[in-house]
Every structure is written in structure tokens, then in C-alpha cells.
Image (tube, rainbow, N blue to C red; front, side, top):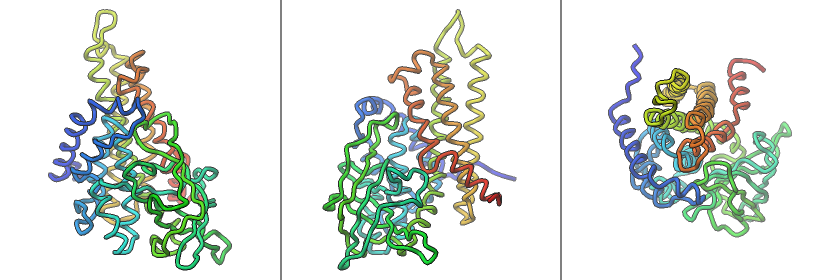
Length: 384
């Protein structure tokens, strides 16, 4: 018999983050969002709670938990706001986990404790202005010169890359040519403030307005040879592995947003009246909310299934792609329906559903577009 009841420690974490999101984040995040300001105080509190160190070993300052714990935290945060949720997701899955998975002990000892404590943030620079989903088309280069990597190129849409507490960005760069003529891509750690490393002005975004996103430029940036992360030429493979985990995390975040749409809609339809009745009494509204709840439950089951295989050490590439595809669709559909239920108020920034609608679309794009997820699922089914 399948038991989907959360273990006691996971349920305790979920409730703790749920309470934090409702009491600490919800009352203030709208102001940060409208000002497009990064919520340093909220992030510091999340760090003090240990959220940035959930899946990182205690020997490196983490909580020694598992990746599913991170997913549960992301879901509860995103029920209230996606900007703080994506800051946590990117800080852990893209900033800290590549170091934790592939770094040397010296690299881990140097950088992980501050990242796990949420005192500093890490970022991962893969996407390039002309590359998009074609990560293999990397143009950024790195060559060895006198015991140093010399990096030249640019990256686009990099989360957590320009905050006052950004510690490092791990970048993928072409470091040679393989025997078959393909590019050899490696991952290299570039500390913030390194000469020649320029963080451009923050983007003006449709959503995630309280999170940090920048384009990066590298002009003869020099870092020590020992800043190579993992084996030379394995950067692309390492990133693909990182993305599989990240897709489960983004699925959890998407489920949170979709659930938040249900939460807000239920409150609203119990208060709003039209034609002499609460609008929640109209079957058209009831059916819309029923469909929203169905999407949430289906998407949650999908990311739970992917996480279960991941924690068992089994291949979960297909399940991660399915979870990301289903969950991001649910977030987009639910945010649209919630906005419709709220009518004109749904178009106002003072109501969370307006924020949810703006935040939902990127979930179908970031960490692999919906088209990429379908391609991965087809490949895993043996279709060439």
C-alpha cells in the first residue's frame, strides 16, 4: 500500500515554513515587489532558519537533510511569494549544490558554510545572450595561463548574481575541443568582485520582481586554476545533473504558486457578493476552483514521485521533466483562473493573485522550457 503521509520531520519543517511564509513574508513582500527591491531581511531570517543548508551535510555547515525537504520549503514559500522562493531555490540548487556535489573538500570548506547559512549567495552562469536553451552552444571561453584560468564571454538571466551578499558565480566555459570535434565545456568558480567580472544593471522583469537577476560579462577575468569545479571537460554533464534536481525543485515551487491561487480564491469567493449571493455559490466558480485544486494535486504527486526516485538513487530524469512540465502548466493555468475569479481586483498589484499571474509564466521557461521537457520525456521513452 502506498503511503503519501509525510514523515514527522518533513511535516514539522513544512508547517514551520508555512507559518513563516504567512506571518513574516506575506504582510511585507508586496512592497518589495512593487519597489523591485531585494528582501535582504527576509533572506537573513530564512538563513537563520537553516533553509539554505537543508540538503547540505553538517560538516559543511548544513542541516544534513535531503533534497525533498528543500522542495517542501519551496512549495510553502511559493504559496505566498515566488521571489523569495526562487532566491532560495537558485541559492541552493544552482549556487551551493554544484559545489557540494562536485567540489573538492577545500572548495567546500571555503565556500559552503556561508552559503549554507544564507549569509552569502551563490549563482550558476550557464545561459548566454545568444544561446537560450542551446547550452551546448556556449561561447564563453577559459584558457589556462600561468596557473590561472582566463575567462572571456557573457551570461544572461543569472539569478542571485548581483546582490550585496553574492559570494560567487560558477560559470560554464569552453576550455578546449574534444576528440570528436565537439566543445569541451568546464565549470569554473568566479568569486564576486574579481577584476574584469562585471555585473550589469538588473533586468526590468515581468515577474519575480523581488528577486535578483542580471547579465554578466567576463573580460580577461583571472581566477586560480584550482577554481575548476569537478573534472575538466565535465562542466556540461555536471550541469545536466544539476538541472535534473533543479527541475524537481522548480516543480515544487510551481505547485506552491498553484496552491496559493486556490488559497486566495477560496478566501475571495467566500467574501465577494454578486447579484445577491456569494460568488462561491455559483457553479461556474465552483467548477473553476475544482479544476484548480485538481491541477495542484496532480502536480504535487508528480514532483513527489520524482523526488522519491531521486532520494533512492534511481534514475529520475523522465520523472523530473514530467513534474516540471505538469507543475509549471498548473501554475500558469491556476494563476489565470484565479485572476479571472478576482475580476478587476485580480489586475491590481495589491492582491496576491496579480503577483502570481506575473510570476507564473517564467516557470514554463526557466531551468528548461516546456518544449525541452517534452523533448526529454520523448528521449527517455526511446524516441530519437
